[in-house]
Length: 383
Image (cartoon, rainbow, N blue to C red; front, side):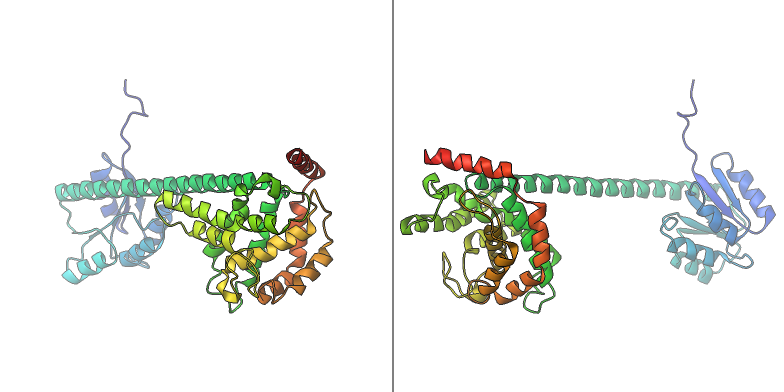
């Protein structure tokens, strides 16, 4: 036995005509094959078209009082909810100009009265089939767009987690804690947002650039993975030879990211930025940094932002070999390095944001357990 759920769904047709006889005639002709909505005016038609189940097709008279069919069609085509509903003008106006105007307004067909039932029924079937096909393609396109967006979010999430995992692995070998990478991420993001309206940086610091900066910042010290434990975990100052080895972490980081990019077989914007940060965040504005002794604007902007973020975090945070410096003292030292160690405009942005830096540091503060764990790692390495 065929249930109601198995019955094919009848398309819905909205018939619009101000003459009762015409409405009765059309209703009798169509009621066996279609669900019908009936409107005796343009205003009533617009209300029915926007209420409840949308009609699959509209048969629309032109010559009606108050609001003619042209105006009804224009309003239907202007509204997102009804613009895709096919409109067929069904009218006594048989002149070519009227037909041309109707089609230009978005109607899919133009049928003149008196109506030939077989022709009307054939045209209805054609246009309903075309609409069903168009609806299918739109639904499929919308589904594909949603699926692409979902998979893009998934790939991006996996990418972000992988980056943080790699960066955290590097940090576990250092006297710093994993929270260092989170703090520096937010520091550089805040600096970039502060400078985005500055004439020197406005062209570069777009939303996309800042997004990539945030994503790539955790890799700034990835090269520390290649530094021997006897140097990396030393609880004190390096001698000259040890410092020369320590300085190679910038090149090691750049080369590791470059190798990964080549293995991928394509250039990736955020990896290019990560290489700039890893390789150049130890450069100084006056050329006394490393590894290339770059001067001023020759230092990539992303690296200049990271230089301030990295030094500030190193100053304020506790390590296994030192206590953290008070915020005010760290700010004073950053300001002292304005124009020598750091880009002057980046320092000015930092000063303007110093309360936000303090807030970020508090939000991602290292716990006592983190410090004790690091102390144990260092002690074990020394033994």
